Length: 606
Image 1 (cartoon, rainbow, N blue to C red):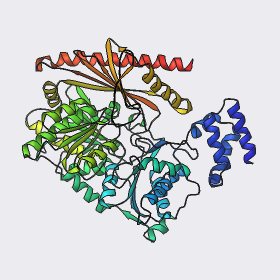
Image 2 (cartoon, rainbow, N blue to C red):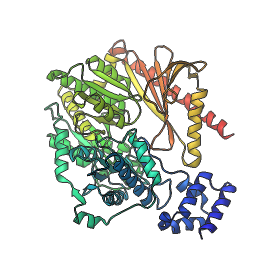
Image 3 (tube, rainbow, N blue to C red):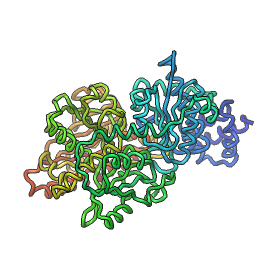
Image 4 (spheres, rainbow, N blue to C red):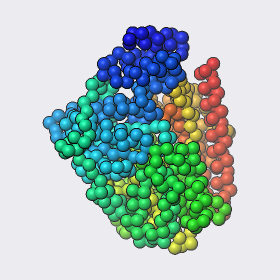
């Protein structure tokens, strides 16, 4: 039977209806005995000649990226999240842990968010771990990613798993792997785990209820919740509480941690936005069912409610509540703050309050990734504290920096994609502590007759006007990966040297560890660690400084471009003019780069 279907697959590859990579992966799913339970669904698609669907399901073996394993859910497919790929992930993590801790005992904690099939996948992860002889702590219902990070540390576990696809659409899910520190896995562990994942064949399992009865799996909940909320609440820096907050969990878990910490610290003017309150994997009342608080449109219904209620600030967390978006209502509408600007406001607030307390030293430090706003670095330097700003994209690198440089001196970490952390209780970003600090800052500003926007303007006057933006080139499916590789190759070999009148003077290439001068693209220096697929372009000196970063996404099929502009502000009266000029230039540069990308993709396809 398998030979008959293999012949059909081979013919589809020869005719160009199916990519070669898909053909190889399907061949394995047709022939290997341990994949026999999925065969009927596979052969049904082959019988139907649905090669387009089969290509989507099998064009790759779903990789581990910056956020673990994440992608489209399906019943079958090496390129999707399904029972098999989740079980492989758990099996690989357990098998690798045995090589690192052969004598045991070994333990894990497992949590999930509100996504479709998340609880099912979490149970599958737990039973796979239990079958490997591990003690498993299993959250009774959905929880936030930062609580999972906290729980790994609090329970003294070796590893942890969060089943979530963060802010992706309802079609997706994922498997985030955490190491003993409570941070997402880093080298060399990531490669070791991946190697074991890809070698998985027959995967052991256990009955969930029986494993619970035998205490191989321990169901946990309220006690860890309380300890986690206490740890975040203890970071409060102000007693100011007179601020009205409208909060949306976007159908995710944020009411358990963001609202939980705000209530625990005495914020009484807190309203949960009812239409987006219900935990629901389809995100029914979110625009496009796409629950990413970086998208201004997801706030539109809450903005209308804020006009009625008079809320001072609107907050929204993504489904697993590690990211926090902020909108400031105004008489003329509302202003959506980028992650960079929220990060700058919080860093300034925390450093200011810690300075008032007198407990800051030059040994204390702030951490940000390379694609996060330089405004945070300028603020940190103004308070005479250390700055670590040379990290690759991914909050796991901020967690690693904490442990390498001493968590007791860590003040705050931020990344542009709405990720923030303070304290020592976790090693992943936490919307709860970010919400606490935004609320406290908002309350203190309100006492002075000011808003978050007023404070942001003050920071621009003090440190220069900064703005940042993003654009992405989405390249889905089998052909998309090659397009992304081609764009990175073109940026490396023959980058644009001028965009919208801005002359690019240099590029830092973290893939080749080189600094190259433009024009000419000749090597002019070496780069130390870290190494990663990231290129950073900088403009020649001018009134408006421009920087552009490019990298392939680690979790989604796209290449991301990050744009930075900076201009000096002579005084408060000139801020509006400086802002308008810098913003206009950034838009022009973005458009010019988009045109370059379109032309380059066209050349690759011709």
